[in-house]
Length: 230
Image (cartoon, rainbow, N blue to C red; front, side):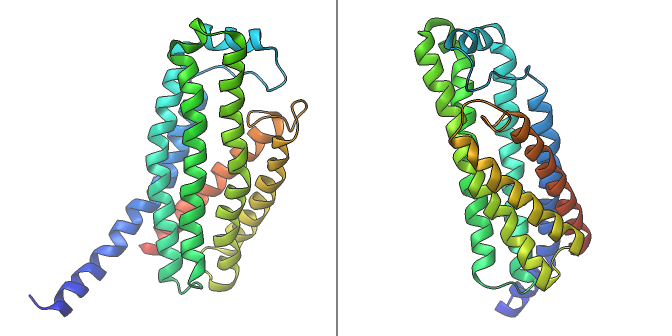
């Protein structure tokens, strides 16, 4: 088999692989939501150390289930990130856009997994045996890991959305919606600076709203990529 035949075969199989990767976004949203509802609403950054410790002692099993679900969701999110970056590349986007999408997606995933690991550690018996101040430190570490990922998520959503307005890689309404979501994530970054109120922590009123809107964008983008590659 010569090189031209190999290249043609790879080209024929690429769309199918991209369609499967695109479905990763829908699977990611479903599994992540299952993990969110596996445990009660976590404490807020302004809560007392004793209250934070009590939460992770009383709901240790649920916290571990939630952490496991979020780890599985990360696998599907990575597939979605790769499919989105590859679709941008095949759609003729500027050379930096696919790489920026892939890079910011991986960085956001790393920050999320770091936060999940900190919370999962508290649910793995550490909260029961540790001093409340140590529990508070791990809790704050988990929150901060998620918080520093907010500007990265803004770039992850914003770059392909901006490109889609010019290259038509995604429907225009999804591109405009994505730009709004990117602004939402950028504003969520203020949670790094506050400990109380609706903007405090990744699980505050504003943070949870942005997460839900982000998941809607992921599902819509996944469906659009799936149809486009079909």
